[in-house]
Image (cartoon, rainbow over all chains, first blue to last red; front, side):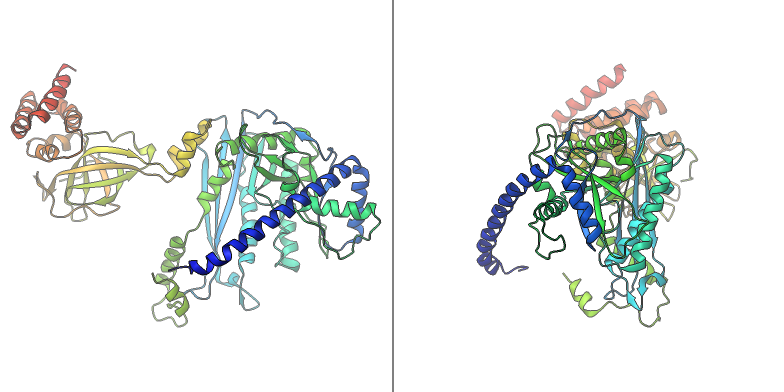
Length: 386
Length: 199
């Protein structure tokens, strides 16, 4: 029996009670913060001041900042162009595992490019890169999942750039899963993080010159940027020091926006304020909006869409991203999610069977009497037994 | 049998047993194979296994099911599912004979083909040679849960222009003989063959 169901059952009722209690508290907090949100939105000058002050005084920050658009504004679905190019990329990886017979790592990137209006099948590409043996170790230790993930994300961005040709119809939108910047990999410190951010920033500079649009799509977002923003606002109007250690009341941005956006509508644009010490001057400046990707009669379904700051300054470009993403998500309308991104993920996904196949291939190339290889750990052996 | 320069590869073997096998191909390769067509698989020992396409199956998956129920699908995404996605079209083949050392036999082969063996569409010369005798027809008439009359009609429509009038007459007599104890099936076969004669 894989689970002791009797023991789980004993705790299940307690778990449900705690969960319902937490949900009730979250609803109460949402009501409270909604009131504060409306107050702050009416007083957006003070709201902006509060954030700017925090930017000067706080060492670390992750919050939203209102843009030129009124914070409570909602924008209906704009028209989509007939001809454009949409390129989605996604990646997966094999993380080296010391329990296997061989330590190896792989990055697998799926590229899916569609020329809308052509009627032609999309162009698909799969790039599989086995990591060099030298890349598997940092200071003598095997690299972590985050480190392989960072290499994958960077490679994904570079391959997107390489997949754009002058023959591709414009406008051209590139789409990735998750935030546009790479700050979220908190376990990677120092130069590696700064170098990665610089590469992303340089790629975006190039995109800006060429007018290539890019967006990061975050499904079921759990971010709390609005709650952080409102906490700064409240402290500002109450003259409480912003660096006071009292934890803010956090509820997710999507809970705060609940019932504010009609299907197809987007929220106002906000700037993402992220600050870490030491500050990185070559870092992508991003904005975001929330988009209700539900079909016209469907249940609310909010996604966060991140775009570069330069793109956010041009309403016609924001409209393009808004329209293209909504329509693409409607292709899978029972569970709206961009079709192009789903296909890129489908292309890139590395399954356990492929990992094992690759290990067999590498082992077959290894001389049979090579010491230190050819056997898995005993733990891994027994885990593999049915 | 000697290799013909005109034979067209149409798929690769997914699974097989002595009396039937299944090949997979992509939708874009689906223009050539048709119901009732004579096909063959070449084995490593140079022998060949012949078969008739008994049905062609278009597979689905969760994504296709979602797209079918969706409001509208851009034509580019319809093309994506037809030409890019890894959903093989299944070609089901009834084994009707084999060739070894240049000799054609209308019996089941000693062993089935192997997975990933290539499936070819027979060219006219192959069809003429394999069907010159009528023994293979018994394999078709033994089929269960298949519209035998439709399969026969499709096959005869392919072979008739390549063979003599006498061949077709003998083939019909052979079918009548083999189905003499199954009046219901015989009636259906004669009905569809009469339709073929008026074309």
